[in-house]
Image (cartoon, rainbow, N blue to C red; front, side, top):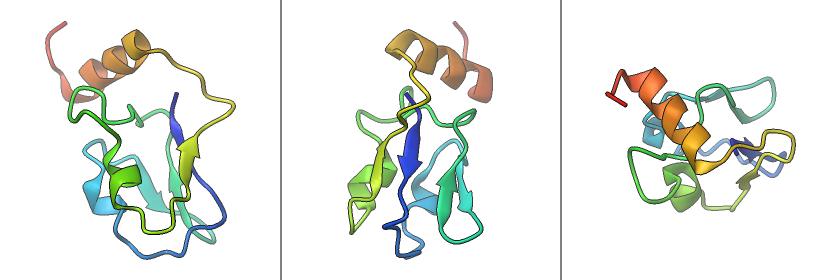
Amino acid sequence: MALLITDECINCDVCEPQCPNEAISMGEDYYVIDPDRCTECVGHYDEPQCQVVCPVECIELHPQWKEGQESLMAKYRRLTGAPA
């Protein structure tokens, strides 16, 4: 699954630089995560770094973007050029 930033986001700017896939950017009102780039940090870290640093815990699983570990790893490889 990709992650989703809820409207509880306070725009504190700590999540964006932590994303190894550059999937987080400023949206119209608060930060958003591009599900095409979000791997939940699979391939980079053991847990999603944006969730680790978020002070208001407003980052959750995206309910409409379901992906398994294999799919997330394939996306990681595609984004980074890592061998299969």
